[in-house]
Amino acid sequence: MASNPRFDSLVIRMTVNQLYAQHGFESTREGARFLALNKDTLDRLLTGKTAKHDPTRIQGIAKRLGASDAVAEQLFDLAVQTHDSAASGFTQARKPGNIGARSPFAIVESAACRLDIYEDNLVTSLLQTIECMRAYAKSSPFVQNAAEIDRIIGYKSDRQVSVFETGEVPAMRVVINEQALLRIRHLPCYEGQLAHLRRMIELHDIGVYILPIAAGPSPAELGTFTLLGFDKPVDFEVAFLDAYAGGAWVEDRDSIADMRRMFKVILQRCVELGAFLNADKRMAQVEP
Image 1 (spheres, rainbow, N blue to C red):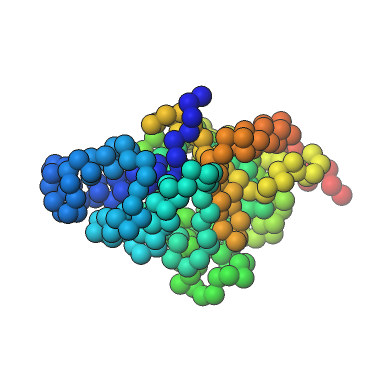
Image 2: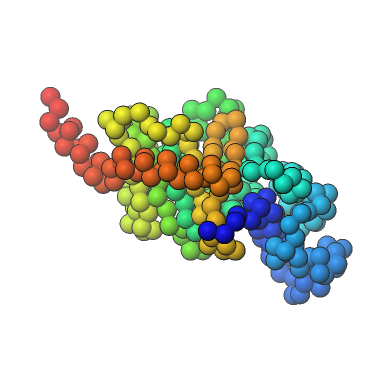
C-alpha cells in the first residue's frame, strides 16, 4: 500500500473543491479572477498538488467561496497542520457551530469508498430514523432547547443524504453493540428503527451486525470508531474516533492497523441483525 497522503491536505482540497463547484465557474481563469489568485496557484490547490498551505490564504479562499466561519476556521487549523511533519491526525473540538453538512469532515465521510463503523452506545447516526435522532437529542445534557434538537436532526439528515443519495453508496459494515438497542427498546422509536435498519440493508447491501452482550467484554477499548477507506486519489485509510469531548481523526498507519485488527476481532464475535432479531424473538416466546 502506498504511503498515505497528508490527511489535512486532502481535506482542504476536497472542501475547497466542493465550495468552488457551487459557483459554476466556466474556467479556472474565471475562478482565479474571482478569488484574486494566480491561475496556476488555484489549479495546484484544486488538483491536490499543493502539500503545504498558507492558513490565512486558505481561510480567505473558503470565506470568499461562501464557507461558514466554523468551516473556514477548521480549514485554517488544517492548513497550520500541513506544516507539521510530525502530525498524525487532527482533533475536531465539539463546540457550537462546528456541526454542518458542509463541514470538511462530513465531506470526507461522503467521499469514502468504504466505511467500517463500530458503535458502542448508540445506533450509528447514518442509520438513525428521525424519531431515534429526536430521542437521542432529547436525552443529551448538552442540548438545551427545541431549536438545537432541530439543528442536530437537520445535520444528521443532511449527512445521510450526502452518503446515500448524492453519489455511489460506500461499501459499509456497521457493528452495533447490543446495549445500544437495549437503551431504546422501551421507546416508541424502537420498532421503527429496527424496520429502518432492515430496509437500509435491503436497499444498499449494508452489513449490519450486533455485538451480543453474551459475547463478553468488548475489545473496542477506544469506544466508537469509524474506518474510512478511499480508492482515489490513492488507496489509503483514515480513522475517526468519536466522543462527546470531540472527534479525533487519525492517519498514523500503525494506529489504523491496530483498529483494523480490532474491527476484525469484533466482527468475529457478532451476529447479523436478522439472525439476532430472530433469536431474540424466539427467546421472548419461551419466556414465562
